[in-house]
Image 1 (cartoon, rainbow, N blue to C red):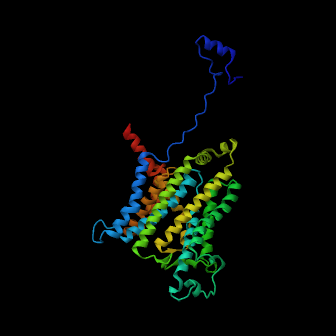
Image 2: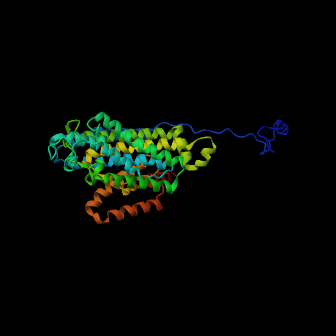
Image 3: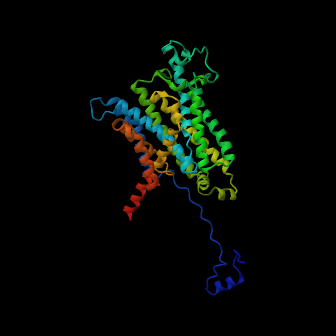
Length: 394
């Protein structure tokens, strides 16, 4: 039986200049990975450029450059890019749970919609008596002959309470759902199926008029936020800048998270959950924590999405929307953080063009794109770029 300590025979051999036997050689020390910087110098340069574009270049091109100029950034472009940045936040949230933890969720659309509905309730209260029925109640409630607001609308007139609920409500839903799912050790395709069932059930619930969420029409006709008109160019640009800063902030947060000890445990769970358990770690707490964080990120994206798009309805909870979030992450490249952001811009940019130029072929393109990426680009567009760069350096 071999021993990790040198034997007398090995000591004598060492004195004579001979090598000790391989079986009795001392084990090498385990080299732990050294935590690198948050971003490389190139990464920080790209981050600063993105920050300047969001906070300075875009506002100047939209608000100060005349409309007739070829450099003018139209209101349509502001709304489109703002919407895509909201989608990019949702894709980044998906990457944390799928790319780094190995949990494929097909129900993240429900968290996106919960954040959107919470903000939508506040925006509906901001309409006040300017609605079609000149009532302080939302128009759909007057139409249904409601006399008072439901209990869950109690704090909807407070912006501070709305910000708190945007985080608290999806976090609570995610915690309850995740606790029972992860505690029961549901994983793989079964977890994906029950998350899809969750978002479908939520969609059916919000379609009902008696729930007080506007039924299949949802919320629309928003007029003000913080008593400031939404339709003004300055407010639209403010929402654009806030969305861009939120995306950049979440990117830095995700970068820090996956580089920490917590992030390394998540990746170990993704690669070999059983080994993690044998090493003395309980996967439940780690999976539940990242699940709640991912849900909150999606909810914040939904809250920023609603005032820029101008509508929220149960269609945002459809299973197809949740699948699209996974497609954005897959197309850009999972477990890369920047990949899902790139994927969200590629897919939604193509969608905005194809739905106008070739509306009947859009869904076929989306399906072909996902199949093609799965078969030929398992690491997504970012993975392909890294491969080509390595090949050129060699």
